[in-house]
Image (cartoon, rainbow over all chains, first blue to last red; front, side):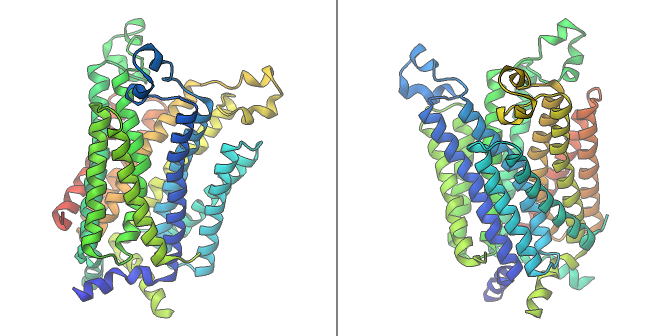
Length: 159
Length: 159
Length: 159
């Protein structure tokens, strides 16, 4: 049993894996924050999608008017979906990359730039900043993931 | 080659990793089930989104009337998207958590509560149950993932 | 430090894990490609959703007409969401499966069929092919993930 414990902490003792774990936790927490921001806008804008969510506002017609879409709510939801589309590949490819034996400094550079780019992307989407602010921050994160995928395929290639 | 095999089963021999594997497989299968429920409602409600999906109902106008949104279909799809938004962070952070050396009993508690909360969330969404049923089950799963992320960052922190 | 490096490349030295890494990188890159196809159709069809994205087309009413939905854009977005719904379970369950000690040939069979099915699914969605082309390619990928989940639960089961 003690030996098993040792095995289980093996990966987490590795610096590159620790860096991956840190940045992955940060970007996933950032993505989870989008749920809270959506809830905040739904409540303050009184814009809901499920009838059971408006029951506390009264019955019948008086509650029905809160079943509507709101531009601010939709904007946060688009940001959340964009996170899913980009953070899922980062988490999956990033794990393989961390295990493919990169230099620690190179790995840190990848993880830091991706995390910074996705935080900027969220601000660019929610403020919103004029383009190409959001487009560029998206492209930077995308390129980092692509670069990690290249390293993974170069190291692991077994079709 | 035999040595490689041994390496590959190393993690799966660890009890915490086995618990993680079990609950991750269960919640991902539960999420996959949403696709089948969506298909079931699309077919029984005759509510499709792609023109090629209605071709078996005839040609032209007679098929076009099945290109519509249905409240039950949309409800399942919202449940599915909510699963993606919450189960993806659980799978990613849960893996790091399982490798961060938690107590087996604590880890099991996290995995069991999350899995139970997400199953409840699905029932609350699809029946639907009156609020705050769905809201609470969502918040419980969210908090479990947050608690695991805290442990990961405390153990692995390397910025 | 040298010892840590050795540890970090342990998994990637394993043939089954290398196969998993290769096919996971490929399907995640394929999913990322959907973002570029969406952007391509948004620009060529001039169909945007964020007001700040149409600013280069002029101000006021002249730009507002580009804030619209386009059938081709929506089709790519549905394909992208379907990828998320199906590739996320593959990546999560596939990792556990690769660590559960399958035969290399069986594992390769699973990974290859899933990857082929998802590439076919994308072509079937975007061309579009008549049904049941898209439905069958979806079902094949779904079944492969289900088969891997069965192996994971049989090997790891610890509730």
